[in-house]
Length: 327
Image 1: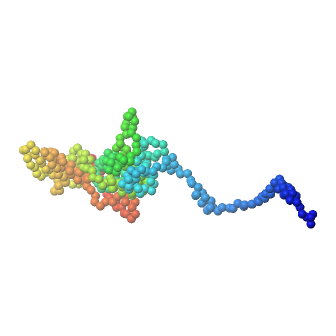
Image 2 (image 1 turned 180 degrees about the vertical axis):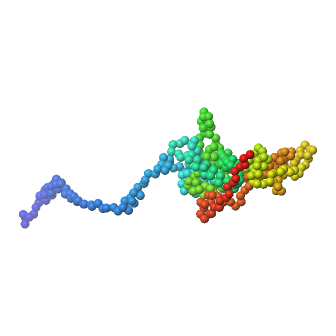
Image 3 (image 1 turned 90 degrees about the vertical axis):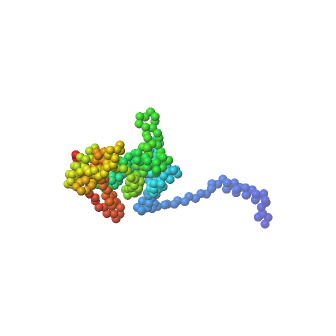
């Protein structure tokens, strides 16, 4: 019994030996090997992964996207440009090519496109409305609606002055950039942006609402030096009787301010009327009035070739006008 008992000293020594052995022995580590077999991906999964990878865009990739300020947003709502699908066009519309900033897109291309679209729809409208208008007069009429001075006045109504981005020409340059030129370019760029983003019908609606709704005096565009001779050739070509001037009324023939009223007749039909301080002046105006009434005769309830773009619309061709008289 006494042999089985150990003294506390022996127990302490054995404990210390066991601790030393555990400290010197390396720790047991276990390594697990897991074999993972690669799974075959379906074609649909591969296409899905490719779609999730962002692809580089080539369109306007060199231009940075700008947030339109409040003035441009108001300008867009005023003209209905808030309906554009590509809202980045707003800052491009109001930026003239003179605004040379790195990474900023200008309206140069939209301006060029808008000018062609504007000419096309204005010409279409005037050609159809006035089928007898001479070609030279038709060209001048289109220019009246689309020239820079007209567009600059419209730009002021649109509020372009508050949003235009441009840089004045350097003083040493011979040709200085005028602000009216900048404003006109923004109006044309607006038309171009609508055509590109919304299509030809929206661009046409804009042109009819803001351009062709205005009245211009087209009579002054008819420049004829000898209206009496010109009218005689015109009546002959139309197979009508030779025009004859007749005095309709007069007042103050012997005074300092006489007034004569002359009518021009083809047969029994009065085709023109004019007044003046002399018989010659009154006859001149009467002959020109007859030519004006003929060449500026308006068509009523006419259709336009571009109506075919509207769903369900039917276009009825109108008669093409005659060529001018050669005197």
